[in-house]
Image (tube, rainbow, N blue to C red):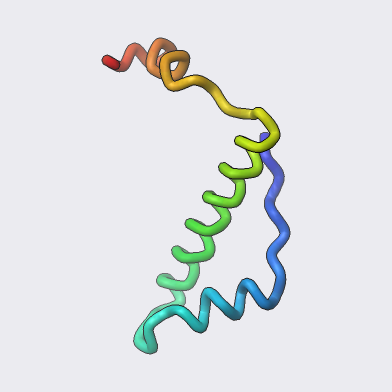
Length: 64
């Protein structure tokens, strides 16, 4: 299982600064969640913690 990727204050400020002025707390939480999911996925990929699409499809019997 992947661990959370550390975030700097500078990165947090960038997220807030790039959001529209009428953003809500929910919008901010969503942006942070998406960013964390992407960072964790990249870290998993770099560490070799991924599975081939065919393997996943076979596990869940999804058509190719």
